[in-house]
Length: 248
Image (cartoon, rainbow, N blue to C red; front, side):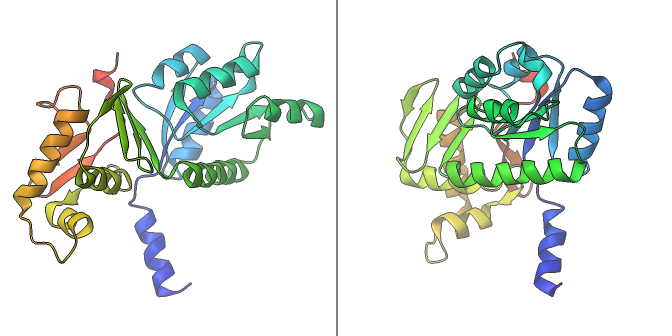
């Protein structure tokens, strides 16, 4: 492995990976799946029931849903449709017990993105989640959703609670850069270099003013932000999911 490859591998261990939602009723399987994905660096939310998992979506939208087909409660298509309605094109990976090709094809045609037969190999399941994330990222690289906000960077369009929010071009640039660096502390100087460019000469106060305006436009309580956070003596970080004690 080259020096560059080694460096990239080391860096990847420190970068936050996406958060998964696992809907599984068996405690032993919950523990197995949580340990499997957390050991790979993923964040994991667990729900015992479909309704519980569905209620988590608005405040903690996952990058991938891993669903035990037993939790579909009779009609997988209805469940998949409800998931798409609540959170767009989130990849859905089904854990199922049927080895029938017809059953697996039907599940995929009803809306699942992948079907993994139980008992499964842990490394294969992680690989399938990664593949689903890559497909999703290619499709949604210009879309961002968090809390009550939806952003379409292609259209330069922002909505909060369904209503259009007016953002400047620079605010879109900041938001896009921060959304590509979720939960990473970003210095004011880095924001200046990456968003304004090396040939512009604004001050760090310019960054503060733009973050303030993003809070005013996109936070529920701008004076007590939960998404655009100040990192003392460093700068800012973007946290798309809500902390547990603010969810309703």
